Image (tube, rainbow, N blue to C red; front, side, top):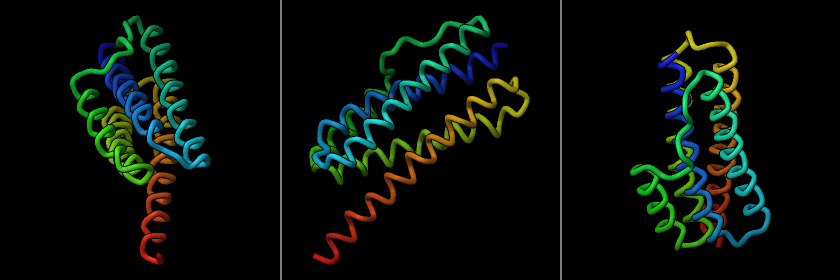
Length: 151
């Protein structure tokens, strides 16, 4: 069960760090539709934390504190700096963060095929959320770039 708890703990910390980064990005997004979507993505990360924490407890582990680790401080700082340039900068920072979360969820699923079914099901559902986040952010950035090209 140590492997299960280890995988879940790493992903939980990743989602904790992502939620903090989303807070930084949200502070700089002025467009209401984009803000609302990014806010929902932050809520997804908070749900991931809750669900992962519940599984960690189910497997007799202790979930991580809801604080940033060292990597989280770096991610938040990067997001803050990129976000100072407005919505497009915030989205570009979040794209980088979502590339990371997608990578880690995909890796956790592929490298641990023998995890219990309930764990794999949750990881796959969370990974699907992450893919949705990345797709939306990428297409929204493309729209910003196209608007600049046609201006």
